[in-house]
Image (cartoon, rainbow, N blue to C red; front, top):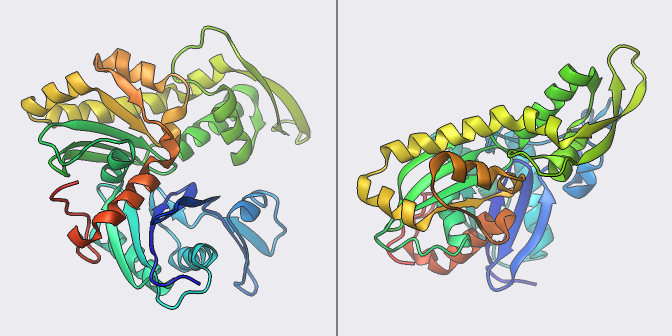
Length: 338
């Protein structure tokens, strides 16, 4: 039994991570929910629900209640949050205080949706923190110092690009081009080039195993199964890393353009800091092979992939719990000193 826990939640489009103060990350599960359409009953959440994606009968749907970094299905998000909070906290006397990260350019309406969903899911108080701020803290950057640091956080639904100084975002941009769009690009490429339809999970496996945004010195191959568009029958084909490079190239270009845009608006003094200190890459999407090399080649600025890049936002959210007295309930993080 826990009394008044403080927990941080990385409410990701693809994955939810929960950080408990004093314990670290205690939960990492896909943000997928399976429900019965007839009764509206939740049948499975997280890993169990992800196994059902694309494999459910007519009355059951497995869906992601978050899209492009924000809530697309309020009711299902609330149920999912309640399930994870209960799983982490067990039986509690006092409801937990919860800090949730949101994309940098989230609207007031989208913020309110996150706060309301967390409150109805059992939170005592809800605090928000911008994803790039959380990612920077999680990557080990001292964001309270008077020098510029650039963070590129590529999650499942959004890519958040921000220049941070003195605890706040000086310039930021949120792109709806991230891990899920990388998967979609692979699906479209295989359909167009090979006349084969593959599923979301297969596309994700391809991205992880042979995906690249910079040419590999050794061509890698992978056998995948799908459905032939002409015959309608199951088929197995071999894909190469060169093909996936072609599929992901337009996605990489959009991310690079976003980085250019933020750099162009950055004050000269902070630009000098970034050229000296480099760009920090966080988030699961940042782990696609060669993206760091591509950014470095195009911008001429050193790029570093943060340690445990996938967990940076959750770790940063958790660390920010130690400074909860600096926060205003329901508002984005206002840091004076970290």
